[in-house]
Image (cartoon, rainbow, N blue to C red):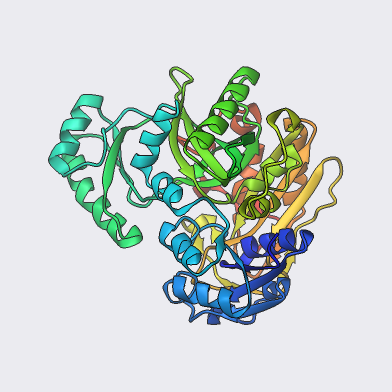
Amino acid sequence: MFRHLLIANRGEVAVRIARAARDLGVVPIGVHSQADARASWLEAFEESVCIGTGPPEKSYLRASALVQAALQTGCSAVHPGWGFLAENARFAALCGQHGLTFVGPRPAVMDRMGLKWPAKRAMAAAGLMGIPGSDGILADADQAARVASEVGYPVLLKADAGGGGRGMRLCEDEPTLRTAFVEARTEARAAFGNDDMYLESYVSGGRHVEVQVLADARGAAIHLGERECSIQRNHQKLIEESPSPALSPTERTDIGLAAAAASAQVGYCGAGTIEFLRLPTTGQLCFMEMNTRLQVEHPVSESVSGVDIVQAQLRLAANQPLGLTQDQVRLSGHSIECRINAEDVHRNFQPTPGTVRVFDLPTEVGPGQVRVDTHLRAGDEVPPQYDSLLAKVIVHAETRDLAIETMQRALSGARVEGVSTTLPLHLAVLSSPEFASGEYDTSSLPFDPANLEASASPGTD
């Protein structure tokens, strides 16, 4: 195992990785921008190195500065967390060139799986079929129009290097498609430095289901069950749960084993997530993409499996065997995660940076277990330059109904003052009949955020 680990990220994920590292006897070393220089979460590290000014491109996205920080602090490994450079094959290769172990898959595998179309081709060869669409990257808008007429409108234009909804456009007809092609390509080039586009048939009312996998360098792979991620806004996940209420026990077993087998076949090593879209007409689970990193929602899989995924990542990166067979994985109970962001739900989810005056997320709320993953405490600043995530509240209970009830109690008792939060959104979703029944999908939230009353968010400001 490594003696010193550089955590090339910030905030909640950096604190989460530092905790796992210490539990394994590994010394966590952090990095920070000038904007984060006084952040309380830096206390999670043995030491921390300033890597630049506030903007991400001048700090957390500076691969050379991160490698230099690792070398000067005697680290032998780098954990990228999520976001920033977590799925950047060049960064992974740069770490390797300087004798640093990158906690993640090999650069070649990351490169292949990080781009949507190569990943679809690789997974199709491994037995996972994708959503009908273009046979590769689109050369231009004319080719996009021809493919769209073949598969039928509506269609989704997608950036091959995309994520978080950027470089994605819904097109109902050919004129819209031609305009959207130029817009999406421009957006993708600016966001990812890659303007390759492909096209898929648009699925309305589908279910977003993903499988958590772990694989070692010896070809062994297992899964830790699936997560339901269909409660989304603008393709951003808001609430996740495991297991998915949409799958039968047989479907659950089949898709988990298929995802693990596909991971092994493509030579994957580490923790990863294979994402599927469940078609509303046939119930078929179609491969969408693979995330070659730790996911924000990994705690729900940890809750139902009892496996610390971050510790597993570190062991696998240190070339240790998986040490766990599929038969030894015991999935139990139900888990739900809510992402609490500093956003104003009454103003189109505008970020609300500022000072958190009061920050109290209770964990003792009765039956069911409550876990809070956060990097904040009262008095901390939420800077405007970065992601607005304040905390993740994760509950685990014997049944789904009890998990929902536990989460409602936890969020109703929360007190956050100084910044507006998405707590009203989560409470509205949890109390909706659509969520209670499990019959929700990706097409819309089960309520209109514009109709939320401020009183729905007790203890927030």
